[in-house]
Amino acid sequence: QYLKNGKIEEITFTQFSMFCKATTAWVKEQSEKKGHKIRVALYGKNNPEYVQLMLGVVCGGGVSIPIDVQADEDTICAVINKSEADILLYDINTPINEKSVLDRCSTLSDIKIMNDPENSMCEEISSKYSGTDVISDAKKEECALILFTSGTTGEGKGVMLSNGNLIDNVFNSEFKKFSKKLNILPINHAFCIKGDFLISFATGSTVCINGDMKDLAQN
Image (tube, rainbow, N blue to C red):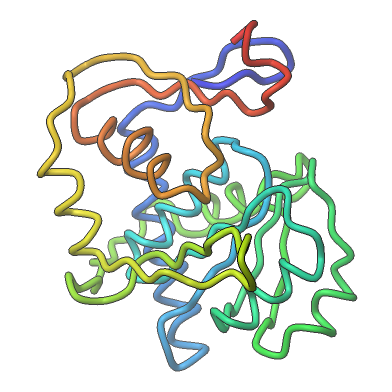
């Protein structure tokens, strides 16, 4: 669940699964163009498009690289260059200087807005690839996520988590089934990805995306 224009909107498990399947087709196409499994950096506030794209890329066998929403351009570029990201998807509510970032990041070939009402990346993937029957070639030992440390004692370092790491973290944890949770932590935190989303999906629970901390009490 999430707030949109003051109203509570919902994404069902079926809708989320369908989007992941469509993203798998997009990931496969992009990976074939690149000659390697694509690495997608994501930057922005917590929102449903962010979650769908991040986990959709992982489901498709690609690598997702969530970036701290408070990062400045220097940090964003450092993360992209260190992780050798191919594509950057960002939140319309956290604008960036696209030309400057492209100029500073040699591996980056494209930048798109994930949730632009006029040209949403989620809508683009859904409209083009929905119904495509593509089987993911993601392997247990392959990298799924690269999470960067805050860099409080120096430059941030990338921590690589495999698909197997994510699976083990989820199924070796005990949580109440069919519960409802309010997501507060930024998506670039490992505990957020595991506790708020992956475990919730595995237990049939509902995640309510807070979005902005100033709305926490109301939400």
